[in-house]
Image (cartoon, rainbow, N blue to C red; front, top):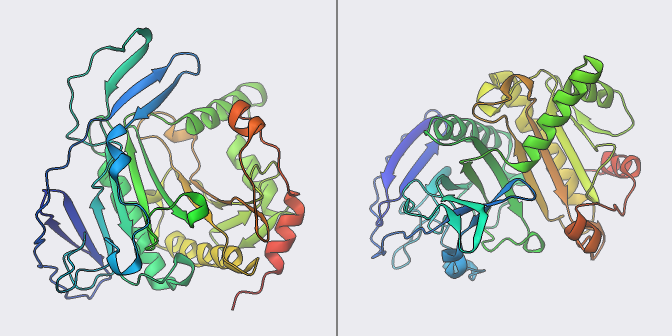
Length: 363
């Protein structure tokens, strides 16, 4: 994999990634007249839940559903400069123009929120990156092909390793939102990477469950779950290095988890064979999501990686892939029980969903 580093007009970093053998120079200049990026994020601690909330009010003016001919993620063309100065690219990563977290954030914040002595405040330190999977605006991840998907896997791993090395970063999260129903504001095929200055609530809860299981039974909860699911009724696809299954207590109408069959803490720890097999099985499962109904399912792909420091020896890398689609033309809305109490009520049966996805014929 070849990497080329450049700067955009406002000073943000842009990285071009090309498969080995590429001779692209990526030397086009960003000709736009851009104001400096202004980031006023802060972290506020919810004392009752014990969780951090990112307050990023400056993001209200971010780009929202532009027409295809004004997409800021397509390559630049004469008279229409974009976020990518070059006229073509394979995979590109750049710092978000409207970041929730940033390394250059204002550090002058009071210790607590106004009138709330228990709501600790911290600067919104971190980094938010955008990952462009292809220059083709009308493409989607399921149609990238195995070579491009493998390049994206390598980019995720490279960025995870580099962001994890930033002092103050505690967790790196790679993800993709796909479909307007999910809340996507730019339709070009892309994902994002967040480098958090804290360990996220989901990862903290999973680690607590793993440790509690070990203390009470002496067992390895991750290993036992993976072993049981590999031979269970909810397997959707599998290969030499990975298994994809609908979790027994799935929260979402269509949800699949992908686990490597050998424990690794994060994407950088995957070897070449695991990365090849990941590209293959991920495209397989995404294809099933795309063809389960007459239109592709909107989805979120969420990489659950080990924290940078704590709990790495206990963690098992995995991907959550889930959709709000519960039936043709129908979405699962997170209403009172889910949004208010965090108690999920599912509209589908996990075993039935696995059977339906196995039956999908991908062209």
